[in-house]
Image 1 (cartoon, one colour):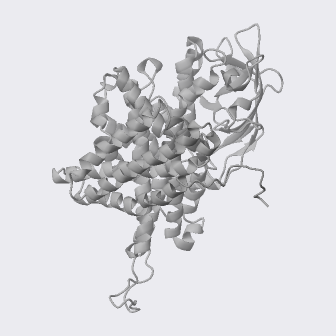
Image 2 (cartoon, rainbow, N blue to C red; image 1 turned 90 degrees about the vertical axis):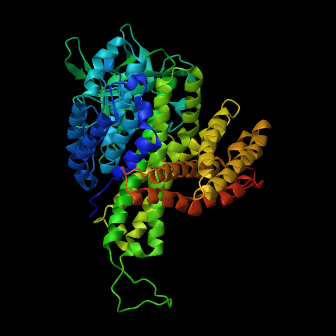
Length: 604
């Protein structure tokens, strides 16, 4: 069985060397922290995850959350995580000191949560959603709501959720019908239903604080009429005691993966006594929710990247222990008298492992980059610098959410194949990782939604300024690596692909200029895949540049083989994955239109 789920050396190298933790810690906001204290924090999270998360991964899959007597029964480690997570500051990590937080860099928080995700992806969501809900209250609600709810949420005493989706609306939030009726008091009456609410209820929670999107009676139609409300499962009275708030847990969804992470169907106001308190201004709910969405989408990418890493570690361990077959001799035949080879010696197995390795490491680098951009936005004092990092983050966010989810699924699938028949058996963890990761391309907006956001909004943002800024960042790495004889060939290849991106954009934009937006966006998913390969190749090349420089400088923080492996991983991705952009470009530049609905029947 798998005994390792993390590569701490790679995590720490990416955080400190590639994504410049010291540069972040030099910002005034983080002056109380240094690299040593951040390492202690991350190491404590790893030790906690080794003890309280990883040992329960399989058990939580085999004993799923379930609905019983109006609540959801979950594994007892959910209670351990919430309470210990509160004590360790895992929920409060990002919050300001004044709000009871630790004021840590988002880069460090992402690294710490990534460890938890890799150890047991069924658990960190309970903390993550509580953190997200508390963040909305801190940023947009009044002092009374802050005082009443945030301290108990950050301590892990109360949980939190974000309630968007409804049975009839799905991802189309303009169609939500949950209603908020004004009263003569300071609250609204809430009625409606929400589905797919992760962490929506569990037996250990004294209270769950729901952040609910609803439409005030008489509000404008569409997204402009949506408001945000704090709707607790149990409402505190004047004495601080809790009384029921007419929030019903209707059911728990039974899922193919992440079975320990409960997903609920909630009903509000069946007895006309569900009270909700308006957050901020009326009709601004979707704006408030989406101001927090970048963090949520980084979280999805982080979770998928972590599963990909854990699956790679399990596959690698198996390949290093499993003897099967024999290597070909110089005659092209196998010697039956020779002892069996470990499967890691076979080229095709090595190819699959290197695919896993490159995707896992690049996906981690991608989510760390997004986290670094978030820190730069928060700490920038120069408006032009703030705008630069804001545009860069907006540009990569759809890729941050999508690449780890889609490529991560492919990576885990290859890991399952490494195990052969055992990969399909429940005795081995790969089949669980394969089921667990599948939801990540659906969380927080499907791949189709992210792809349309990338091509339809982000690539054209500020007349293409965001895309131009990203291209400039990529060119910096290309220029650096062009000076190195070993890396030069890869730099030139990436430079050529970057130029091809411009040609693709010009071709597609002609349709947008004519007002034919359906044609412009019809192959958005293909564009997402294409640009993801460009961005991922850049990140791997950037890591290789750092590794090469560290090796030349004689940096002994990591081994010679560690630095060599980063260069080898980059070269593998360029040969086997970046090359796929050739066929993707051919599709994007093809003028044949086959997916837009016409009068012709094609599904017959």
